[in-house]
Image (cartoon, rainbow, N blue to C red):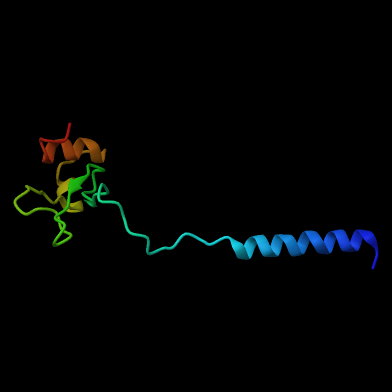
Length: 90
């Protein structure tokens, strides 16, 4: 065997051993207690989630706006229509 082949074989063997020696981080690692879940509200505003149910707390006001509501405003821009329909939107 030629010296360059031995060097190449040694490097490949060392790489294989190193790859086998490293452990990937477990996907089932426990999450820290400081992490919180948030419900997606569609407005990028995080809402706290009840740890027992995984849902947003009840009693928070929500308003649904559909395509027909937006079209009925006569506005060309969705933002302007939302400002008319939902006064809390600035």
